[in-house]
Amino acid sequence: MSEAQAAQDRRDRVFLVVVDDSPERRTALRYACLRARKSGGRVALLRVIEPAGQVEWAGVGAMLAEERRQDAEKLLSGLAAEVNELTGGIPILLIREGDPRDELLALLEEDPRISILVLAAATGSGGPGPLISALAGRYAAKLAVPMTIVPGDLSEEALERVT
Image (cartoon, rainbow, N blue to C red):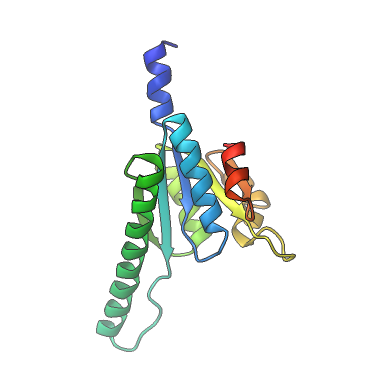
């Protein structure tokens, strides 16, 4: 492999972070940003929103779905600014609707740009979290990319050291 091809491969490395509402999300995001910055890669942010449930009036359902999408866009926009500040690059922003695990697995299968999935483990005694438990358990064979699990309570110093 030529030196130019190796440099292009590093630039093409995309670290995917699932943007959920857990406190550990921040650690996963910081880890992915630091890895992307140090390796010349990019960060992708995925927010999965709940599908519109059964609503008696279609207009109300459409309005609720639009509100959830706008909230997701606002959240990702704020995180994109943080990613840009840390990495110097614009992240890939992805919003999908459905079950988080199913949408994540579908995205990983569909999008060849994604190289590494970055998740942070929950810090409590209840286990690493439902998504990590599912992906490391019965859905492990469906993962199309390597998964990095970061301890959810890593300090800034520890994150700098391990990236």
